[in-house]
Image 1 (cartoon, helix red, strand yellow):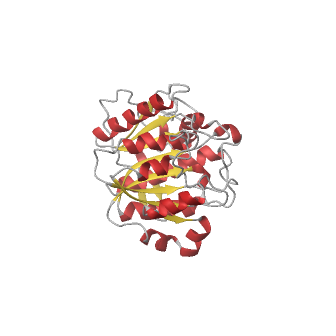
Image 2 (image 1 turned 180 degrees about the vertical axis):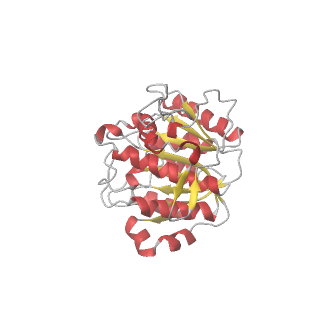
Image 3 (image 1 turned 90 degrees about the vertical axis):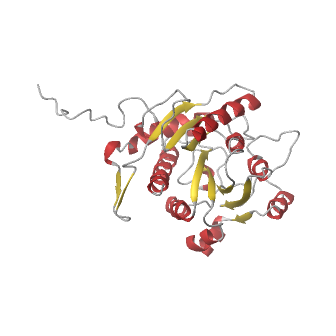
Length: 314
């Protein structure tokens, strides 16, 4: 009897296991064979206000099934290019999180990123709060230098507060301390931020280029890209609160006046052509504050479109 799927399963978005983009799952971290590998980092013990980003990886994976393109790839008529057609993406599951133990949880995330790098793949880490960037950057210590590009509402350049050095207000400071991080570009920083004036002064003294959303808009995409060193390796850290909360309400610290989708995608598409994006994390998606699910959809859509452009240039 014919059932209408003789050539294989239809596999609609609401069917099956929610791996990222419905790409293959590989839980053996010593057998990763991919161009890019997805790692969940469901840790939110570094938050200073609303928790819930521990559920971000699960929400982004579920949202990403909407964009599960299968083997045909995704045709973009504006670029006249089919993205994600001839590339290998795998989902390696989540780093194990030890409740109340930041050090061990971060170590487990770092191990996952190291395994991805050892396999020659690009790590794409789903947070979790922004503190998970700290172990991600640590994992690059044996790699060639990187320039860190941060898309965020908050500077996250606090050195230490009441003994806390590895919370979600600290990651860019910890990154700047690493000798293999050659500089920072921090875009979208605005309004009441997570860092005092001396943090901004320290960041600039260390060579950081800081632009608000309004400054990015005034300069325009191309002028912003020209401020970023060309022909180098980029590590990209995207905080979902960089986007305006009208399109990304599901985050712990929403900040009005944020980016729109295409503003960020055009920046990232240009960055992919300007150098080599070698690592990505996307953090602070907290689905419990967004019953509509649009924040997770935004995260998934941005990552898949970004990966398509990065892998097309490999």
